Length: 130
Image: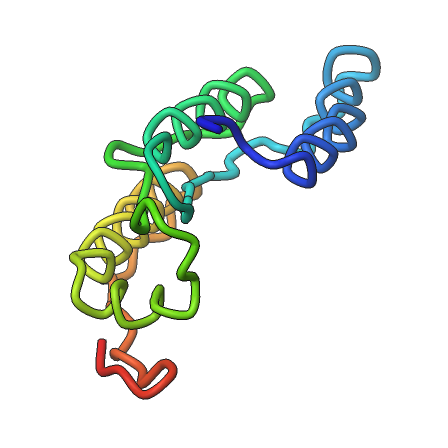
């Protein structure tokens, strides 16, 4: 609870070799890379989880934009089959667009490639209009 899953932890641990490439061999595999975070779950802890991920990725060398997270917190129940409907009614889509735009803008600044951000068109997911 309030922590990322064991699968995410395993991925982060395996990414440690990328971090070590820089500190040991001065090979910068993460240079000019941008990270954003999407967390979904039931109960509280989404902001804490995304914050822990942001801190970890920043320590590895990833660039973190402002408003770097998008999250959805489901109900206290275990009714995950209702999540699609709950997400459709939530502001997750606006948060996701802000996250994508901020990642894009930071990436453009880091690489010097500037193109106008074009948000993706809403999709029909599980019968619910975004």
